[in-house]
Length: 260
Image (cartoon, rainbow, N blue to C red; front, side, top):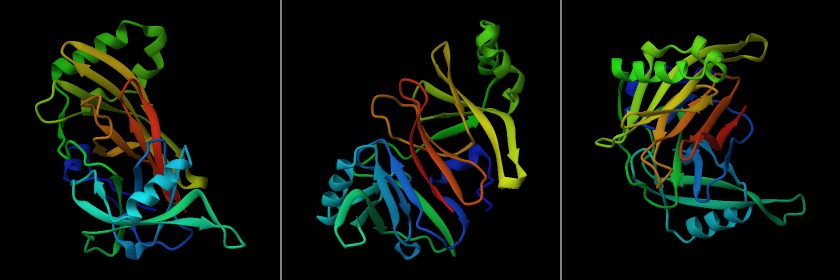
């Protein structure tokens, strides 16, 4: 399935990722963060099966949505109404390890499916400044890589530093630097993705956070303790292969959205 192919600087336009409409089993959102989940932007596209690391957070989201309190798009900050229904066993008994969620609000006027990342609480910012990496920033990363050839030798050989992008909240001195790496392809499995490496810079200090499996297609404010963006990452696969990554305190996957 063909996914969004625009470059990172254009991604400031929004969080939603677009793909052709498709039928099939319900897509799934799994999150390690209470109150943070993926859903279709249009309820006409159906419900998304929502799960959390702690099943208790499914009930919390259901109580919140079904009481009419709504959720907020991390793309625009717009408030959406939401509904959550518990999964049911074959006998019809409610099972709260997962639930079906929909949001109702501003629906895209497109005949393609779009999803968004939603939060039970308003986000601080929906704006992200993006630009190409500067020469001093290239030099700072190169110096870091040279400082430990044992650790960074394999990484250094695959980095495309000249095409890296810098992402930040406007006015913040804390920067995320996203550097393209190697391409991984499995044609038999309809898989194609370019790994990307993530660095953080504040002042003169640069640190290496790690590798994400695909291209960051958009950014989200998911970590109140830092100005670094959360990364919504897409891999080209036979269906939807979306992951959400936190950069706070190191690189960690905190969510996913997908299914065939």
